[in-house]
Amino acid sequence: MSILKKAVCLQGAFLMAGLAVLAPAAAAGESQTNTPCCFTNQRFTGTCEVVPGENETCASILAYLNNQQSVGKNYCANTTVRGGWAKTDCEAKDTSASCGVSSPKKVPEQNPFPSSN
Image 1 (cartoon, rainbow, N blue to C red):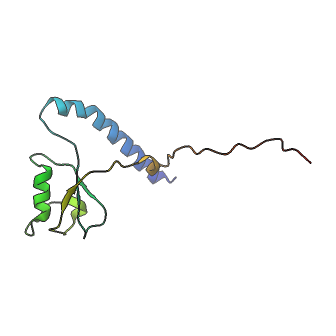
Image 2 (image 1 turned 90 degrees about the vertical axis):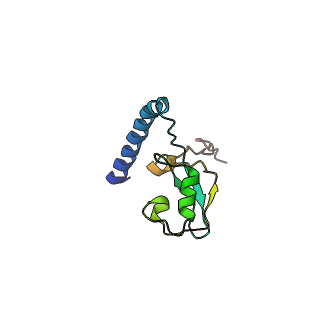
Image 3 (image 1 turned 45 degrees about the vertical axis):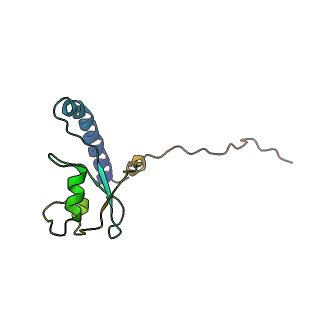
């Protein structure tokens, strides 16, 4: 694994730890949510995932994406696709392999002392 990739993985781990510490504080204050909203469009590859900011809802983000005149927000990798967006369920993502961590694989047992016939 390259040094840059290790640094990015470490940075991501620290970010996640920081979010875990800050989440209870946010929950105690306003009714702010970090639940992502997911959207699909036939003209957009994959699923667009957006975490609503202050004064935003999934409905307001969907209205923005479907408004032909909307400009200025960086939703969905700053796409210019307008119209045809629909809300969808967000799928759980497995990010364990992204930093070189993978699930253990079962190796078939072998006899270390094969019989010589």
